[in-house]
Amino acid sequence: DTGVSQDPRHKITKRGQNVTFRCDPISEHNRLYWYRQTLGQGPEFLTYFQNEAQLEKSRLLSDRFSAERPKGSFSTLEIQRTEQGDSAMYLCASSLGGMANEKLFFGSGTQLSVL
Amino acid sequence: QQQVKQSPQSLIVQKGGIPIINCAYENTAFDYFPWYQQFPGKGPALLIAIRPDVSEKKEGRFTISFNKSAKQFSLHIMDSQPGDSATYFCAASKSGGYQKVTFGTGTKLQVIP
Image (cartoon, rainbow over all chains, first blue to last red; front, top):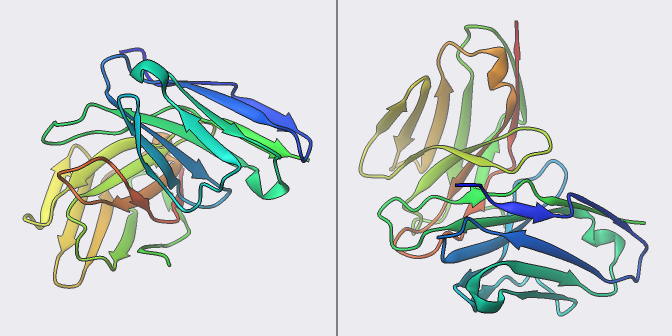
């Protein structure tokens, strides 16, 4: 169990630029999630994948956001035309679905700062 | 709409003290209540969880108390240590499906030696 890995750990960008984050879940986990955490708040659900299928998207995920999980392995989250309000910690989590006490394992996140 | 309310926002206790963090939820469809611990620069990590069919659960120094009728639950940390200094989040979700978790706003705990 090598844990959930996220890259990059930090990203500074200018408003209007596009950014892409990567998440590598725990290898045997079939479920993958993206959450967003702003300063002083708890994480908020953004989207969920079961294998390669994106099964739910939060209304927080505007059309500038797109997430993919090709082949049900790693996932990417892209933000187009970034805005200052996008500044946050983007957390990826994974889990093994179907377990009685399914546990979420979070990565250390990508801290995005939009200038 | 904040579905899980958490208090206090911050807490300072001396080593050996018993910090208590309280949460309340609104959605009666929630039936799984985990607590997460987060250190600076890290993602949240599951600490302990409870389902509403029990009123208390203990794991090591951590205890969850659950009051279904009041829709409230709390975390107690026995014999707190400086290494427990972290931000704690209560959370809630519906079991039987994927982990769409609703988090509280967090409590920053500082344990003074």
